[in-house]
Length: 338
Image (cartoon, rainbow, N blue to C red; front, side, top):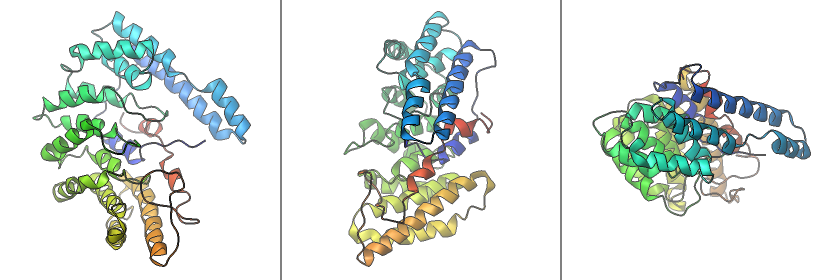
């Protein structure tokens, strides 16, 4: 069973922000802890499974059901609307169980000015708590979060909100980016190109999973970030994303892409302990893509195995590329300040 997640840099970036968990003993925190325990047990059991039949049995018996936890969170939020955890619980329900009764109730409550008047930091923290090991999917919260971010441009914490909106499009197979992504991306680079909190925006444009077909539209956004931003993690992810989107632009730019990958390897040598795992995995991916480009130059065939947009893979070259994304933010976060 393979899952696709936002790259490991997400975990490092989120550990770097001033994430504020709910207090121990908080009833919302207890529900989220229950979810985390069930999720840990499920993932651990999957990791021990040796056969497809065993994995299917574990999925049927142990896979946690978001609807059950969403119902508990929304019931509690309706009973205790002024609690600090209510915003977190409602966001979690909308993101993880959008098609359930609880998810619809939560969205109605959030549309009723709950997000519009939320403190940017509290909203950012609530949104980060929605991340789970389940596959990401676009959320109906994105337009609400975008609207909130657009009203607090003077606050540097708006960069986190805009980045979340952009991450909402990660892994989408749509032929065009969403309107919310386009608007958030423009706001982000216009106002926060130098922010330390935007590495995940860069990863949406290019990561070890490749680049979206429309990623080339945002080449100038990455150039501006590389010109203005001094944060190593942001520069690392932006540099890799630049090479990735150039690679998928067309045959005429393959040598340019190879050169950008080579520059990336020279500039990011896994010497910074804070982001060493990010750089190592991106270096490995960059080397694979250089090999692919050289193979194509010599006449070797190259095509993606999974049908997604992005850099191709060939036998023996980037076979393990997907595995570089197997570390999920939830687990890495527990070792960080959050």
